[in-house]
Length: 286
DNA sequence: CACACGTGGTG
DNA sequence: TCACCAAGTGT
Image 1 (spheres, chains in turn red, green, orange):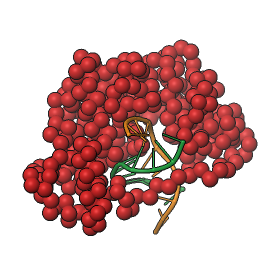
Image 2 (cartoon, helix red, strand yellow):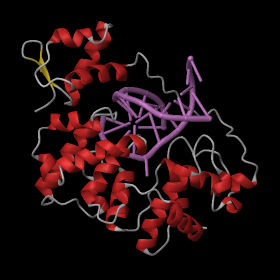
Image 3 (tube, chains in turn cyan, purple, red):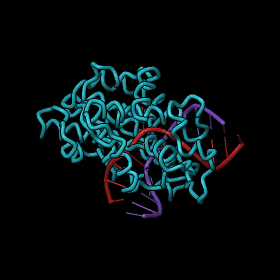
Image 4 (cartoon, chains in turn yellow, green, cyan):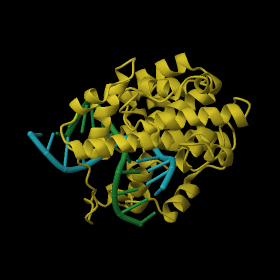
């Protein structure tokens, strides 16, 4: 089972820049932040520019947080840019400018949760960790549980199952981690899986059962149009595109509903994604 | 534990 | 067209 996925990966892995042997732990860490809830295709270019401009954590830490937010562009969830900047500061101050190697230390960094800590430790340092992202959860749900989709929220059962699949040898475990993710991203996809190209289709409980459609209510809502999120995005876009402080009038012009605009503005200020007031004008954080 | 948090591609 | 989906984290 594992061996076949490793063989498949050797033949079909995408040539992503953060997977190249010369990729640094920092470059891998940046990619992981950008890839949180964001497709690979959209990350490629911003990642290249980011690591070119800030090749090490101290380089980013020395820049204003607002520049990180600006460089984040339209990747979405701009708080990730802020967290990455804060993580760079912590690495600079507490770890001599080097990305920590232990899962526990990584976990203490802003924006680094269970998945990202495991991913960095595994991909950058070849350690043995359960790397349980949405791809792997779906792959395991189908292969081992016979379900079309994993549970809505991660369970201890999933972690236990993932641990059983994880090879003992660290290097092999690290390849399995990236390979099982890649299988989920390229073959065992959410919408229309390409089972005919799956290296372990004959071992897949779900496929053997005839690919039953998910039973429960499942799916969650996602609506975006007219939400606070869209409003925040509109406000922040104004600041990103301006080199000077933005007047209140310009912010008012980008969103018609005043109460929602006020709420979004307040939340952006509270998050530290922007600074200022009506008197001084508004800007990305220094 | 449910919800907030961006954005754009796609079937 | 439009709802779903994309390498999650923090509260």
